[in-house]
Length: 282
Image (cartoon, rainbow, N blue to C red; front, side):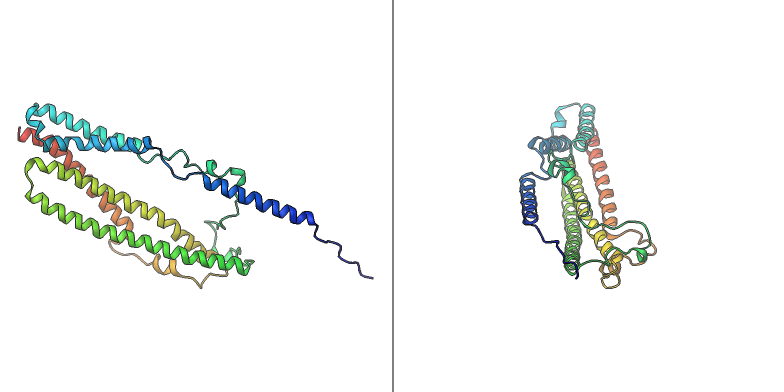
């Protein structure tokens, strides 16, 4: 007589599952109440002080205050304001908020290391077997994630392109105004242009930093999940063309280089104007 399987699910097992589910929901709700990437008011205002100091010489030249002060003294004062303003801004800007720490939102022991499904960076992709045992539901989740990632990455690419078009329009406008401006108005225009170029540079860097992890995740899904390998090719079609001649950077990297160079030139020009104008036109 065959032995019967006596492994009957105990009612306590269901209770344990319900208790675990309840504790998970409680943890999610508790974590939801915590703020992410939140800076205090003081943290937001400190960088603004640096911008005000940086802008002050241009405003004073526009008001012709330099005519009431010794030219050399005003030039020294302007140089100090610009250098100190830039230094203070970069010391205070970009600091993480008090809640911008992973351990403060999710306790380390509560983190599930198996989520999201990650893939090794090294090793031959053909010898990587994770994914063969994916269930249909897990595979569907990955396909949905892949589709979402594609949309998000393309959206950020469009933001980069639109920022470029807007920056070109701004440059054209500044060029037209600059050609007709009075001498005491030039520092203000150059100061505003330098800030505008910096904003465009930081915007593109932020867009690129948000997009690149999406491309990487899409690449991993295409290359390292055997069930999907050879069937999904968006990343390898768009992101792996051969480059030639001067085309050694991606479009986003090229634009970042151009904007940073223009920002540097605008800052140097602004510095030269506020220092030299009081000496040339006392």
